[in-house]
Amino acid sequence: MSAAAVEYPCDGPERNLLEEAERISAMLPGYRVEIIGEEITVTPPPDMPHGDSLTDLTFAFAPAHGKLTRVVQGSGVWLPDGPFDYAVPDLAVVDADYRDHCIEHNCYDPTIFRLVLEVTSSNLGNDLKTKVTAYAIAKIPVYVIVNRTKQRIHVLTDPIANEYNHHRVCAPGEHITLPESIGAEVTLDVEAVLAAGRP
Image 1: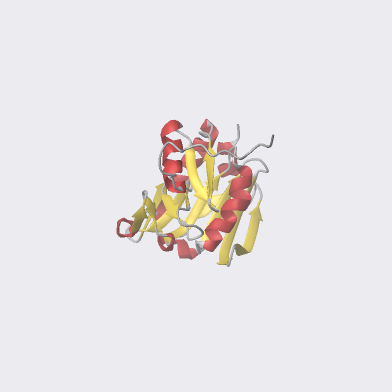
Image 2: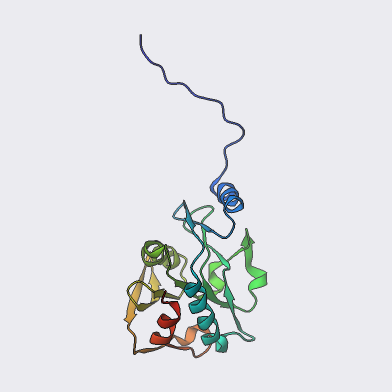
């Protein structure tokens, strides 16, 4: 006797990735759900030092929060790499007319993003690899990563294809002046930013 493949009926129409991501979000409040490279990624809520670091960074970016640009937290960027791809950076500097550029699912056109910033938590590989590619493909000019594990801040600029042409790694004791293209002069004290994020 031979075994034959058996197909079981589905309970309804197949969900697309966006619908599945929304379902997961509803099941896991507080988790960050993103679709990057046509894969759903789920990140648990960050610890309190992550939030402390992010608050300090928000104050540091105050000069960029004005008439031409705005500083926002946790706002989605629609990624061109897949039909439903989007990411939710911890912090971003966007054009002030962002309301005119919502695409869907509360995600915005990547052309309005001047800078995205991630403070690492349990998703270290995602921030250091996957999102580098995704943000470069989206042509976001500046990507800043606060690497709490290695105690470094990475500043990536000049996206080309699926990578950034320039990658500066900054250690405690240094000060970083970010590119003027973000719309204001912003200088980060690496030690202060990293100290706020230490467990």
